Length: 556
Image 1 (cartoon, rainbow, N blue to C red):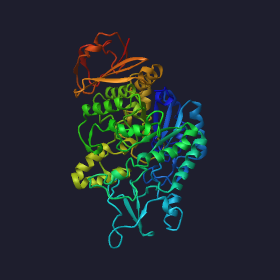
Image 2: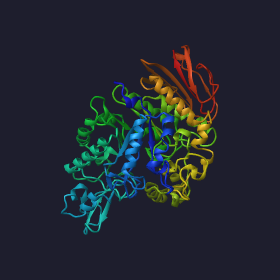
Image 3: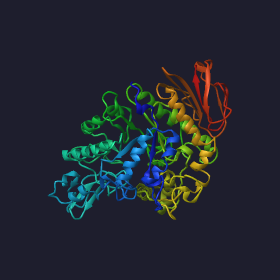
Image 4: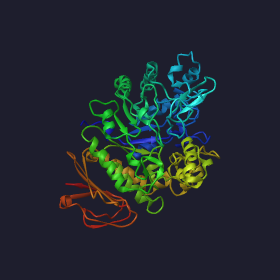
């Protein structure tokens, strides 16, 4: 496999609404991001993925786009964006935009025009007659990712339209070739500005089964066999590549319910429809069936099994992505390690894994200093449409108390609280009296300023790992072999390439655990590269690993 810039890069995701407010309105903006470029440079990242900056009525906070060629006025102007792009490039940071093309906002001009059955835009969306005597039943039994029917009736049109997400996010109809032409034009608009690529939102949903037939009965995502990884995906992605290839643009696809064979369908090196994809197995070790609302105790065995599948399945054929957090996931500290007791060690342990597996690591804002979930307990405090809709659904299954407990644990708003910059008012995010979403009250103890000043902080450990990764390609390239597969507490693995060997051992328990190194490597020569404790063993030996202890060795 070829060495590529994106394989060796460390990405950082910014959720603009919550990053930094410059004009005291309680909402993050582009000028706020510009004011923190030095912070990002100091962290050492190579590329930024921006959650949507486009014009949006915010039914799903940017993932419902009303104008793909305009900046959300809450975030600033196109001139602000151009300035930010120029400054980031000046600092050798690439810019990845969010490409949301499965659906638009219902306020988009295309959709508004489509409500006229004689308009050329009517067929830009899936408008269908309903079933039943008066057509008042949905056209099929498909259900939404946000719970409930995937269809909404429009009184003006007298028809139903498809929305796999919120009712304010109607799905685009790619059976109409004009839709793809519009999207290609949007790609060129941003690529001509100089952006370096796209994160492709729910990209594997573009191809629906012709005729939109009923799905097999299912308690969740009914009809998914007709709208996930459909038969025309290669054709549609190939049409996107007609433009992307001209600019040598990077793409990472958000791939719903993806597995290794499906990932290889899209990302096999030399025949790429997407540069790489996000698989969500890494964040499913504390739920059942990949449904985050079905909470279960964290299982290291489940996590290791999943990661082994991806590490082996793509190696030599395609390229992995690595992440613990994003705007759709609760904070990993508090899920895979304790959010209070030994929080710093736990966060560093998770950073160690992120930076030493095969794949490109993505860091989500605040993750780099160990931010935890807010865990709000009143549904009225949540802004996220998914949280509100799934809460109502779960209430009928688990009762109000059980539904609230699960929502507090897994809600996307856990990751969307304002960035915790310091211990001043509103965590230094804004001077406004109120913020668009509540600030996590633990910002007094957990914030970027405190972390910058503490040499033993999670932030400074991330910086160290990023430097190590940049200076030693054995962190980037190489095979993966794990040991103690059945252990529920220890994750130990060997990375081997032409650049050398790394041996990584992590204790995922919040207590001491006995450890004996594998026989095949115990007698080799080692150098301790780093650890989340100051006095870890200089060579792998029989010992007791302390709570969340993580050590990286280089084999000579």
